[in-house]
Amino acid sequence: MRPQLVIGNKNYSSWSLRPWLAVRHAGIEFDEVRIALYTPEGTAQLRQLSPSGKAPVWREGECVVWDSLAICEYLAERMPTLWPSDAIARAIARSVSAEMHSGFTALRTHMTMNARARGRHVPMTPEIAAEIDRIETIWTDCRHRFGACGPWLFGAFSIADAMFAPVALRFVPYGVSRPGVVDDYVATLMADPHLQAWIADAKRESDVLEQFECGR
Ligand SMILES: N[C@@H](CCC(=O)N[C@@H](CS)C(=O)NCC(=O)O)C(=O)O
Image 1 (cartoon, rainbow, N blue to C red):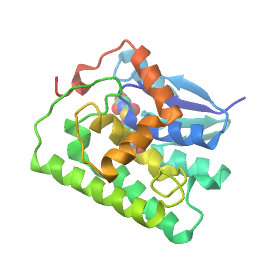
Image 2: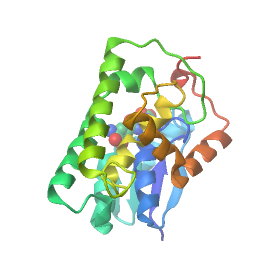
Image 3: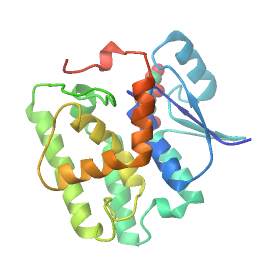
Image 4: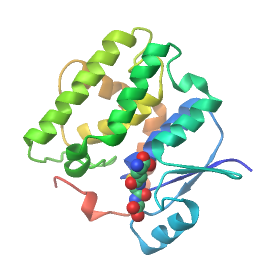
């Protein structure tokens, strides 16, 4: 049986997008199980499928891995090119991935990922601006130090790109633009065929979760 990646709504579930993008870039075959988040049926299904009751979860026979970054790490054991080969680059890639995984709460709360929305506006607070500044610093540092051999943060696609991909689906709908590395890297993400496929699926979803429709 093929492994399964259990994910939430493609329009809203940033945590689901991260391992989904990593596994697509790794070329590992898998079946996608999509759950309608925050519905009674979806919540019950997730409780059956995921030890944490949350998406994403990777299910492969007896091996059940939950939490986006843990799934990415598991995938990288099979496909080591998901992390940079150089030890220092790999350590930085892990650092920025962990920072994204554990931080950026203002962006998460006030600029929720919305793959199909455009033209949204939320007030720019000092907290949001500081997090965007930090993202710009991370992206600039990675691109300048490690990005010479390709368009991604560490040149070739890595888990760090998967971890930051949902930021593009925040910056585009809410009109966040900074000429230079930020806009260029968002363009790289938005041109990725796998991310395009995800967005196309999100546009086909009909469910609307009002609590995540910011800035209308
Ligand atoms: N830290 C977790 C977060 C997972 C998470 O919060 N998932 C959300 C969807 S994006 C979820 O399953 N929510 C459903 C619920 O809480 O009922 C990860 O990295 O995977």
